[in-house]
Length: 243
Image (cartoon, rainbow, N blue to C red; front, side, top):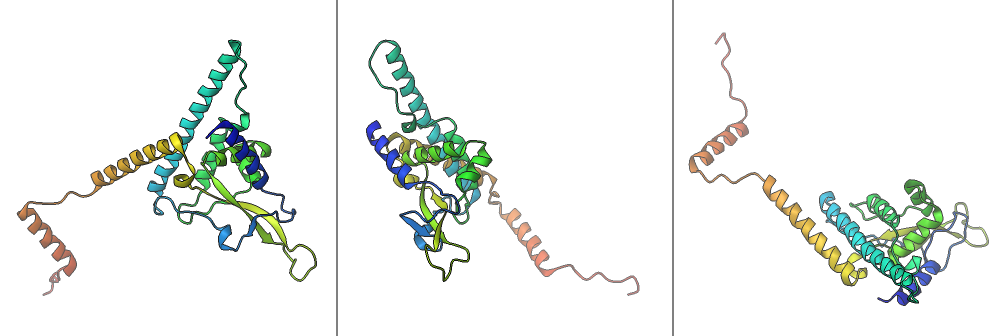
């Protein structure tokens, strides 16, 4: 995807994305928080935390590989300018920044691996990461443009608004989700799948190594069977001293 197309994406995302203040009216293309469209969450890792951790690690490593390519392109452009070539530097909003990783990490850590739910406000992300509200908003747009995160806008019914005239809805936090298989492209997609495959294989190998070994010796098997049988029957009656 070209830099120009990324710029177009970023401009569109800035228009469509974002979280409003609690008292703002509902924005266009928002879905009520109780509707199905406002719950786009996906389950990664079959609700298993260890498997989810492999997805999380793959996403972060994919970010790192993209970030490295962006830095190399930026350095090459700067070197060309120093050499006297007439070349424009990459737009800051069309490449990943180092602190974008902190935003992505927070969202991955906040993800509920059992339900897929993820809906913190920009203010919460900013407070938890120590970044500014404006930076968090811009970082989200960059992460979205490169396929690392996505969201839908949500609205909610104003408290005490039932039966009153005027708008009944107000904006609430976005519903975030990860759709790496569909949204990552090119080298980023290959990187993600590569790291995910490695992680899942390591997890499977670790589980196989920790599984109890099968007993093939007939005498050992018979002895264990007698022990299990005795345990199932319960404790034997012990004669009393007076008997």
